[in-house]
Length: 361
Image (tube, rainbow, N blue to C red; front, side):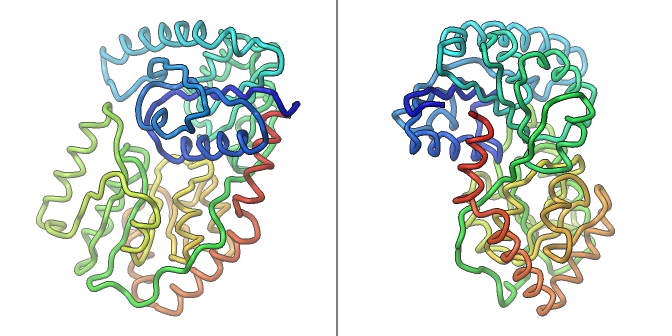
């Protein structure tokens, strides 16, 4: 890549969650290194947050959304139509000499396949491939994938099994940062920093905390329009007598502001996370983290950097929360081990240039 080359980023959503935070960091890094940057994504918070020097190509939402039943079939047809329209919007720049095409999400892969960049596209893989739906999209777009850049070893495994060329480049977070935690809040607060979408496991956390009197829980994160029913279910669960008055929905909140309020951080995802930034952020501030034992979460928290529990097991999660809340020495030891792991493996000052190089070289 030359200094005056262009990087085209493709994203399926206009919302901002962990994957889009990585994308925004990559855009900043690309600009620091002298690249022209272009992003094709729907209008929304993501487009609002890109630098003014980044060209924005508006496209439609490329995912299925939260539709169910017969409506899901209609949504799939509309999704395919949006893939075609989006590919026409980016085709000229994707095929221009000196352009590197970086796909930031599974449902943007077909746009790359349809626009046919001469060098192929790099796919930054933020989700572990576990479903038939994911495999079908990858199979369709496979010929356009020059390299799949996985953010964890666990996520690389099914990609290699699908015959894709794969490299691993871990996520990073800002380092150094101050240490949070210490004396427990009164009452103690358990927090989760994740979009309100079913596979993030909020319901499991609420069921766990329901068995732990005198502990509050805070849910930080927004939601996609298609997840309205799920959000309503969470509010209904939180209103029941065993949790009433002990659950707060914070909405969109920046990580440091949320983490300052908490004593323990939980990542309760029921499907494997690839490399959850929320876990790394909590680790960097020295808060004890309890996560589900699969995917990138396992890699982050293994060997004493956190506590791992079986996915979907509310009783095991409750036991882990109770143990950590009741043992100040354990909380401090977990926080120290977590901060060391971030400093040694996940400093964004080192991981981000490496990630951009793997995506564009």
